[in-house]
Image (cartoon, rainbow, N blue to C red):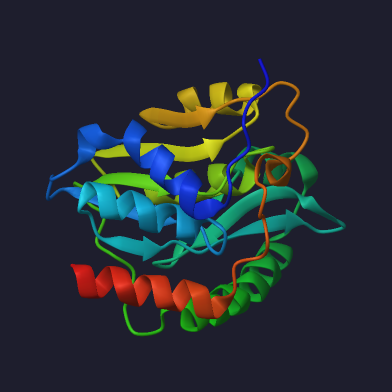
Length: 217
């Protein structure tokens, strides 16, 4: 049976929210959106759950010369996570690490100011954190985000997306406490194929949704 495509991220968020109703009305839940595409999805989730919304900016630290291969990540709140085993195996020097961290920290700060310069990162210790994006293909960015959130000591960590490659969704079951993937079509190919409208979310849209969520709180 063919999987129906979502009209847009708003519809995807509403359908995903139905799968997360068990978290509604709880004062320990925080929803973190991976910008930019995850924000419209997460906004609909927070409307259903009555939970606060924040962006969680994460930047992968690419191996020098192989940017797509992540040797770690930095994220909102000053979190730095390194794959120590990979760093040792590849003989990456402290100077190379520091250069990569400095480069990505500059971009992370720029994005945080662009999206949500008014507020600092939310306090996550002891919270139930729901990490939301518009979909998972390889899942590398979400994996980096999950690693970073773990460093902030949440009580429970949930990854929630409207659509994902089935194998990627399964891989996350060993990384976080719960994985909610609304649909896992086969063959998958790419996240954007499962949306009728997958136009890029703008910085202005991100800011507007965050302001609307804050006003609702």
